[in-house]
Structure formats: C-alpha cells, structure tokens
Image (cartoon, rainbow, N blue to C red; front, side):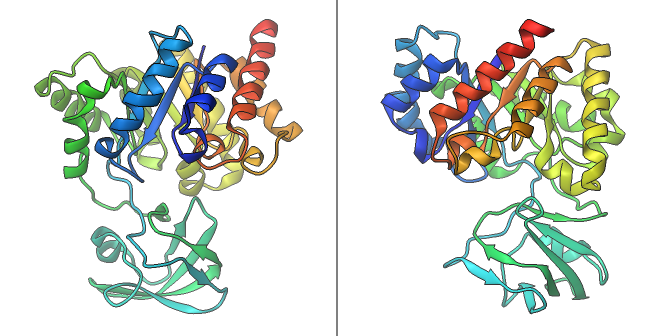
Amino acid sequence: MEFYATLGDPCARRDILDSMFRAGMTGIRVNLSHTTLAKCAPLLEELYWPAARGAGRRDAHLILDLQGPELRIGELPRPISLRKGEEILLGDGGIPVPRGILQTARRGQQISIDDGALLLDVKRSSPTVLLCRVVRGGPLLSKKSLSLLGAEVDTPTLTADDLENLSRAYKCGVTHILQPFVRNRQDIDILRDTLAVLGLGHLQIMAKIEEQQGLDHLDEIIQAADQICIARGDLGNAIPLWKLPGIQKDVARRCREAGRNFCLVTQLLWSMEQRPVPTRAEVNDIYNSVLDGASSLMLTGETAAGKWPVQAMEYLVRTAGEAMKAG
C-alpha cells in the first residue's frame, strides 16, 4: 500500500523527510495550485530524493498535482476578513476571481470558498463583476479554492501553467500525475496525448473525482485512467455533504469491480494540523477506507501546513496496517 504526504514548509527539512520515510511514507505530492515545479525543483533535488535514497526507497513516488480546470481566488495583497451579512464585490474592483465564474454566475446561486469554509450568495451579476452577500464568513486568503454550486464553469483541461510544469516533470523525477476535476474520458485523453508528446507516456495518471460531472462519467473515467483519486474536499462542495460517505463507498465499489486502484484524500487526519493525536473518528475513517479497498492514502494539509507531519504519517501508516491485518 502507498502512503503519500504533501510537500510544504513543515516537512521541507531533511530530518523531517527522513523521519516520514522511516514512518512508512512511500511518496510525496507537489500541489501546483500554490507553487510551480521550477520553484520546488531545488528542494526535491537537495532534500526529497536524497531522503528517499537514504531510506532505501529507490521506488519512491513523486506526484504532480496539476492546476487543471480548478477555480481559485486570485492574489490578494493581504488576507481579508469576511463578515456574515456584509456585501462584497468579486471581479473588477473587488476580489479577483477567474473570468469563468463572472461569466457563469447568476443571481440566487451560491459560491463556496476554501472547501466550504466561506459561503457567498450572488445578489447581482454581470460579465465583469458580482455583488455577493456573505452567508458564512471568516478569513479569506489568496489562492483558496472556489466553486459555483450547482453549475458547471467552462474551463480548459490543461492550462499554460500545467504545460510549463509538465515540461519539467522528467528532469524532476515525477512518477505520477494527479489530474484535478476530471469531467470525462476526454480530459484524460488530452492529458495522455500531451504526456506522450513530451516523452512522459510512462507516467501514471491519477484522475481526481471531485465534481458531479466526474461522477456522471465515472465508468468511462475508471477505464481511461491508471488510478482514481476520491478527492473529498471539492467533492464535498459539489454535493450535499451528508451524501459524501455513500458516494465514496459507491466509487470505491465501482473501482474494485473494475480492478482499478484508488487513492483517498482530504481530511484523513485534519485535526493533526493542530494536535499531535488524531480523533477517534479520523482513525476509524482510515481503517474503513482500507477495508473498502483503497490502494493508497494521501495526507494534504496535515503535512503541508500542519504542526505534526511525522506523527501524522505514523498514525496513517499504523492505522492502515491494522486494517490490512483485519482484511
């Protein structure tokens, strides 16, 4: 079984990476929604790969998580505090958002930000600006995820930034491509054709299921991808949250029946961003995910931003190990 972390400041040290490999880590994810492969290359060359070799992990994985058609808040000069009930502008003269959101959003729709931490009601819309009321407030930071609930925003499969990052993948030792917001088989075919042109046809494609379109075309995506990734963050925004457990179970079942490996990600040990010990619910979640057939588990904020990256990896590996004994 594979155990993945996400690269970030807390684990960008050789001693921390050494400890995470000793705990059972088998690979790491680079989240390109917040950085570029060019910026990460020195860290990978000087810290990650030496740590992998030192741990005897010559088969360690390096997973490139592309931006893809993901929607995010633009760059802000400073964090903004959004208060419930206040009105704000998105677009020209306000908070920067992708043009597709401005062109698609209509009055009465809701916009989810940062995996649902913030929620806005659209009061007035135009092609260049949206007037919104804050339903659920809190701090807003640059590059946070954005979702127009109940609507599909037309976006390209691969962005210019994706192509630039892919051009560096071979030199950096990338082994897997995590393709976000896969909508149908065509998205995978476009990525696979691009990889072939770049001489990267050997890389594994992990298709992230994180919106309704992906669920609607799940069978064809399972057939086209090398692996499936059940990405519960944005998936939990795209559907009523109480439906997420059943959908996760259904995707897992369909992957098993098709003989396709799948990875589970998002909030596996979310509390460990701040605490050295997980909740009982979290370890139960991990245990049951392994029993459901997950071939890999991935930590995100727990290692990219959390205070206890080594301990989080230890709990992930040990809990999964108990499940494998039972299975």
